[in-house]
Image 1 (cartoon, rainbow, N blue to C red):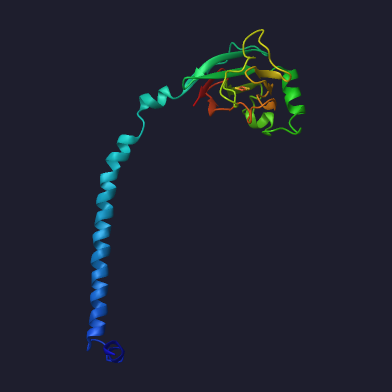
Image 2 (cartoon, rainbow, N blue to C red; image 1 turned 90 degrees about the vertical axis):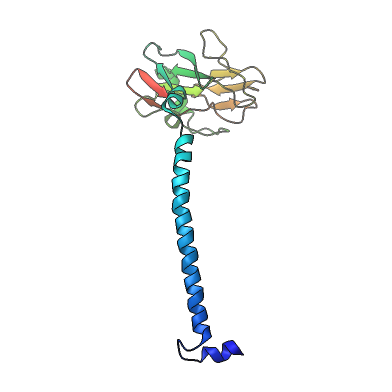
Length: 193
Ligand code: FES
């Protein structure tokens, strides 16, 4: 009842409006306190975030530069990236044509050669040398190794066959050989990572 009668009382003459004013003042104090806490929190977080950011040394160690100048067409090299095997392959014109011819066929993990290479460098295929089934290192990067039924890489552990673009074509592996992030620093040097 008190509130009902107060609602009809002129402004400033009742405890209801004073009460509302009081609520507004309290809200303002809370907002001001929260804002101060937010600013303080930001200043506290900044050194924490800045400490968590990886140092230049760590960033350098997490990328690898590969000299691809000495890789002839049809050859691959094995190196490492973040302590895992990395395959770098220079495709022959025939392998490029075969990979493109298969771009549209049904695959478990569909991807075109263009999607797995860089524009203007479709002859350079860079993939992790880690089978996507259980993580073995597939064959096919070294001279004379079994390249499987599709001429790319073959994982004999359980019989996964990858084609010349590193796409899974047969066997239990669920995905294509992973293409890491990389960029060409020049025509002969690639930075991976
Ligand atoms: S780990 Fe490659 S086929 Fe099983």
